Length: 205
Image 1 (cartoon, rainbow, N blue to C red):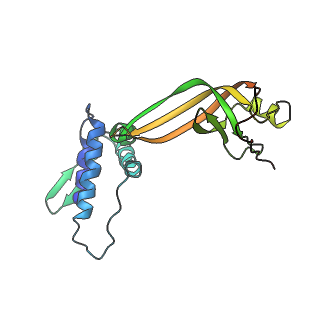
Image 2 (cartoon, one colour; image 1 turned 60 degrees about the vertical axis):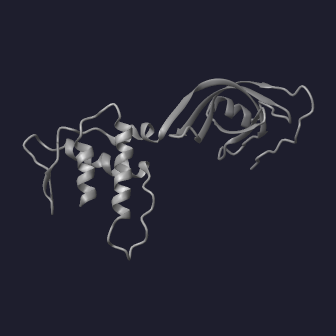
Image 3 (cartoon, helix red, strand yellow; image 1 turned 180 degrees about the vertical axis):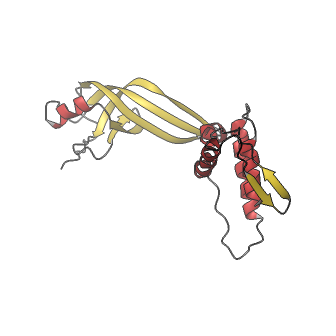
């Protein structure tokens, strides 16, 4: 019940500039309440992930939004009666990134050395970019159809000149947590100028 009241207090508070920090504090407060529970025979509660927490919070806010001005939402506890603020319906899921860290995204031109193409359409391609390995889905359906029809040969040492959509997420300590690349446009195949550094690996039916 303490957790429910703390949750409603957060949801009822007017949106502020530090909303992400307030969401993170709610998670920490709920975690502390769970760990201090007198019910000792239950397993130790797992760490609360913000992505999991905000889903039911959004549902509560959506429910509040459906109530009429004359309705009331009350929570009765041993400490008394708490009345929710029906006028505040912010969506906590909008502040997850702000609470957890930051993201960087965009589209940029890249030249990617093909290591493992995909003929089946069920897996991402594997590339080399300098010393880094890059896995990416190719979203350019027109180019893919030509490639799978054999109109675009890929031989060992080939590279793709393409436009790549990237998305990086960082935690609050600045550490990179997730990376995603998608090839949104293949502009041309760059033929090898010399022998490949390593053999190409094909995914075939």
